[in-house]
View 1 (cartoon, helix red, strand yellow):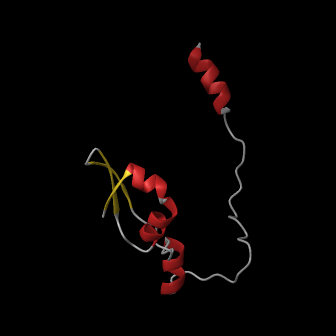
View 2: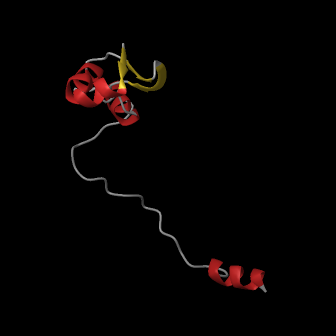
Length: 87
């Protein structure tokens, strides 16, 4: 559906409802298409949701415990290497 900028401004909420419902809107200026508005799907099919739904991952509902990886300071600090490199 093509809509002029003036018409879009006058009835913005109505056109946004149409886009949310799945209708693609082409915005025109002097009868030339300058933009396209498409709605964002309400269902979020994120990667995590797919993993949970497929049984690849599980979640007990709590906060993640975090990784058991601990970084230790060995060697020359990066800041010192940068200063030496600058000369």
